[in-house]
Length: 524
Image (cartoon, rainbow, N blue to C red; front, side, top):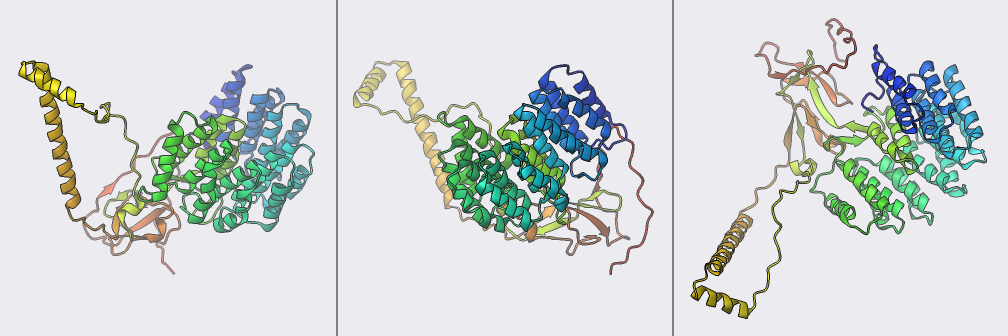
């Protein structure tokens, strides 16, 4: 996962290590499983024929767990390459042929999802394979067809793809297929979240729990980080669903939508309290607790600096992120695949760099909103070990008289106890007085705007109220649709600006090519 999509480096140390790990795993399914998934991640989208052969050897060994991982690994190696490449075409043909021969359901499912990864972003070029999988008698292949449609048409909102998924969602006899079809509506329509919400509104009220599960996940994918009111209204009833796995996905989807929202949002405060209750209560089912724990992780992803994102700011689809969602959703069948959600996370930030790729500290952006509106949520505090306050104990009149008699008789322990009680009451009175004094102070109004230093976190909801480069020494060379701004120093004759130099992080690969020679750029 750390080296995902990094096998293009010159040394290939990561892939070589993983290939050796697979060869030395022997008959250990768990090690083969991890090695195959790791190799697929590291060599993602490379289409490497040699690595394909290594994974195919594990697949042909016909081990259920390792074979499933090998099929997924093959799909990751050929992610988005389509069948135009002879090697990728051969891989798809062999995957489907072997899936029809094997008796292991895990391998069949891995192959079905694997071929969908190969067709990611291919749109109409994937239609022949989709039609082949849709008409198969085995529901697992039809399940693969739903994922192939979702990945092939990710972010396009293609009408034909939407119609095919809706038809599968309401007519297929397999619950798995129906759940996958509704889920992949979220991938196809994630660029038009409001239309998706209208589309799945009735499906979210379906009598079929699998359809409700898929509808919740589809909304979570499409509306991640948006805080959409309509999305929250659709998911909220499922937080109390009678079926535990529907509640599980409702927790996860709600966390996706509320990701990076501040504590000042009452919805976040209520939802966080609900998650804490579900996690700590003993009578909650394991599935519900799992969903609540995952939801807590999504809310705090990357220290609250990351959010699920399937496309760039310029609208280009990120196939790696879509693949991460597709494989992560298979945790329904195999829990280690939960880790793949990390592939869909992207940092939400702003950073300005000068011509030397240093960070000028004087550069800032103006946010036209109150600071609390986009503030970080307060992290959970660790237990300080202090004893919790206990309820006050009722004191009987007979006990008070006994204490008085003991004091008269000169018993020191009783006298000390009374003095301790008086001191505690005095402390409490002092504390209550301080609180009352604090509450009586006039509240200072919160500013309506503030400056963001360079670099800074800018959430998806915050981007609309942030202005960059007005009246400053450093201004962007051009309006940027990304999070990185190349800055131009307008005061070239002035004092050298304060900058923070970024230290390169070495990964053992050769140095990058040198920057191009200086040139003059004249804006239109």
